[in-house]
Figure 1: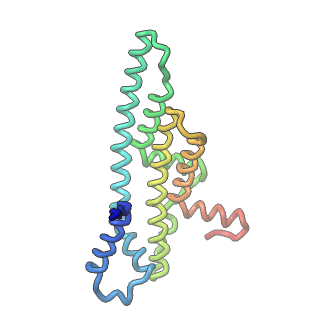
Figure 2 (figure 1 turned 60 degrees about the vertical axis):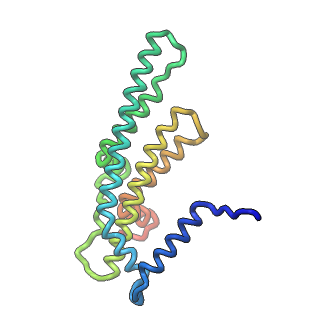
Figure 3 (figure 1 turned 45 degrees about the horizontal axis):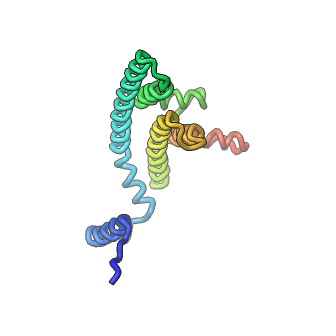
Length: 200
């Protein structure tokens, strides 16, 4: 008899479904998508700190790799080796510095597109469930933008290996898209003004 091998994600889905059915077997009559998004947004500041901490660790690792690459480059030069290139270590150092100084890197990205960036301008003093939902959506999009900004920076490190075609453009797309998501308010205002719809 042939043994059935399910992919690992099928087992994860089945296990999560079993846990979810048992853990949330309570009255969920008042729960909707807006409530779930608002509840998730409460944990976004902690997730943002975790993402930033991961970027700092990655940046430190990349800077160390860049310094070791420079050391290797210097040793190859003294041995008159023809296989030496400064491109890899310099890219590692630049990307590592960008991750170590993540808030400054993001701020420079804002300054590239907007004269007076205001990523938190969507937060108003108005109260109400709809305004809370809008604020929650903006927070979640900011978290996603930060993750994609970091992903774009890390994709830059693959430029040294000469891997896939279009690697630079793909990394730049992630970085620019991440900046637009982090400052979604100004990005949407730009779109609205361009289309003649006025301010948000």
